[in-house]
Length: 263
Image (cartoon, rainbow, N blue to C red; front, side, top):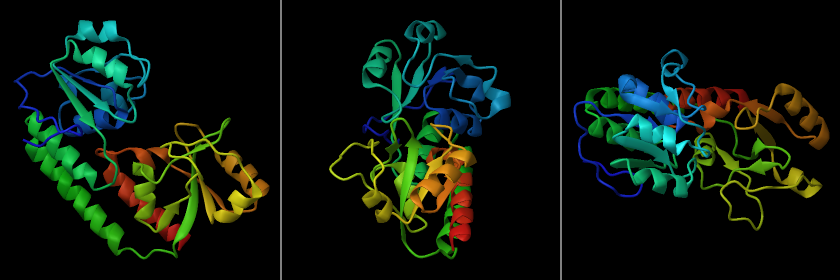
């Protein structure tokens, strides 16, 4: 059996597992693995696939979880993520949920292990294999695609205050696949550092990427910022850049289109 992000080896689930997912991208992956009817709880941010998750009970957000509501759902399995969920909350849930599966993909190819992990636990190995094969096909196309010159890009996830991502994140590793090096905030070891605009910082980057999530940046934001700093500013689909799981396959295709546009 494969192990989760903490090295925990999980036995195969019983015939009727009851899953609570606190990770939007994993909720979508579980549905892609044919496990939608086993998901008894999700966050309000678990919005894909829309037609399916609409019928699954909401248990709060990724940070503000309703523990009592989850307890009443009597789950056998909880799926969480190191970046997205708070450890004290997970510890409280682990007191009454038998199996806590911890995820933490840090690079695109980590999705292969994630597919295999959930496929093995929940008796969905065949569908997991199909996802692995689809991922490998898209990854091969991405690697073979022409790319532009290496660039240093600032990826923005929030404003007021402005926030970016460190190089030790899934988003940064996605960017690296097309030759975009993530700008790193000087003197900060935070995974999602706050920064201030300056002439020196603007001069250090070749362009800026504004993500559509978690902050809802728009083309209007991109246009205004481009006028302000005098560097190219591109609005990018935050789900395609940051969601692992089954959406990562489309994410690779999206990266290929970004590279083609930048070439």
